[in-house]
Image (cartoon, rainbow, N blue to C red; front, side, top):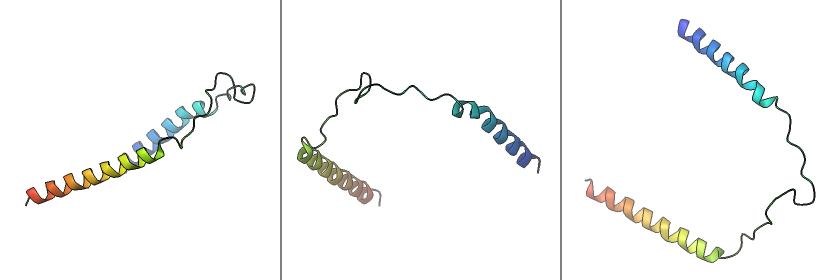
Length: 74
């Protein structure tokens, strides 16, 4: 029972201590359509085929290595 009370009081204390971070004022709103100093948006569809091929090859390699490790442990 004593450990339950200690955990409860510690949790309550830490929650009350961290509430000041949530009560901080919001940052000022950015000016302009992109904001101040925002980089221009980047395209995500460039070289998507290469990324897919690389991810597939890495997945096949990982499965192959896992199967090799499983076979040698017997």
